Image (cartoon, rainbow, N blue to C red; front, side, top):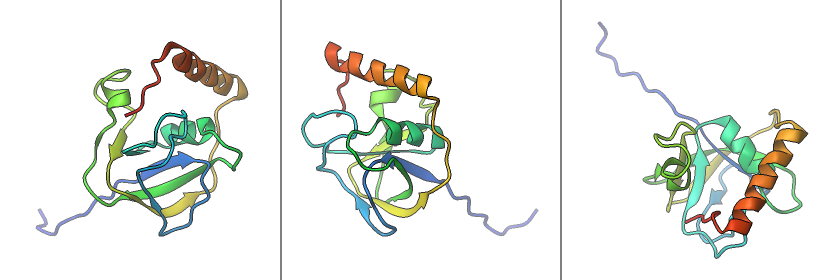
Amino acid sequence: MSSAATTFSQSFFHGTRADLKPGDLVVVGYQSNFTDVKPLSWVYFTATLDAAIWGAELATGSGRERIYVVEPTGPFIDDPNLTDKKFPGNPALSYRSQNPLRVIAEVVHWQGHSPERLQQMKMNVERAKADGTNIID
């Protein structure tokens, strides 16, 4: 057995409508992609492309849907908005951090969800807003 160390890299993604470039930072203090609540004290990201696609597709605003490969610049934790409430154990591999995310690259080729599935999810988001259950920390 070799004693040489092997490094494995984990890719992380951030879905949004913001127009960013490699080297830019995603930082706390901006509005959520999904609600008009107070500026966020966390930045959110995922290790699954599917969750990032949802982030891009559900983001408010008029910009183009974008997905970025990002690198956390500090500690991060499981996203309790999903892992504590909807998906115990974090199967969506969703995280948050109070430290910036550095944009590494943009994912330019990805397949969005079907129009029917997207409309269903948008209705779920609107229902959560109306019920007051769309709280994002």
